[in-house]
Length: 63
Image (tube, rainbow, N blue to C red):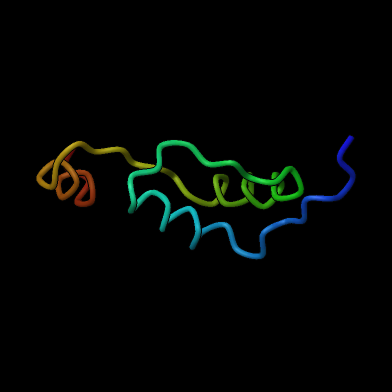
């Protein structure tokens, strides 16, 4: 039996961005950060794209 606590991360954005930049497709997030994570998702409307041209068109509201 292992005893101990997993503490929350102070900032989720930076480590998640670094992980994604390095090819991560999955992230383990401490349960204590669940509220912070949901707050980030609620504030941002993710727009998905597959190439730079599609990204530009979506940014301009043309798709």
